[in-house]
Amino acid sequence: DLALRRAGPDRPEAEIRLRRARARALELAASAPVTRLVHGDLHPANVLHGPGGRLVAIDPRPAWGDPDFDAVDWALDGVSCAAELAERAGRLAELVPGLRADRLRDWAGALGALTGEARLRAGHEDARTRFLLGS
Image (cartoon, rainbow, N blue to C red; front, side, top):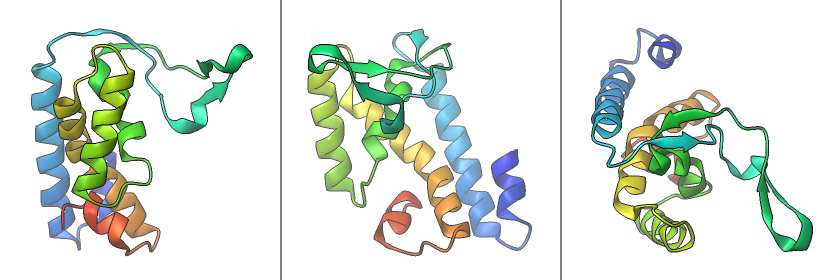
């Protein structure tokens, strides 16, 4: 796994965290209540304001998968505590038909380790990084 190789052999806590995150992600993928065509790379930089004020998603990487996973970057963007994540997931679930706030939070927990490890390697040792790493 790329994330494990990047963590390096001298950081056993990172390996444990990433292996747990992977296991949780596999559980979530296997338990998806529905799978369908998803954008595949749906993050804030890939959504533009279109005609009439409508939002337009660009640069897709189409995949068949869990729609709750597809929204995880939106849920995690700028979040640095569990309360912010819960609020964001709830708001997104209200806006997107069929999106489940509980699964979105679960996906964020599983994938937060990847983002947190990348931030840590880049020298970001702040509240956001600690939250993403589950500390």
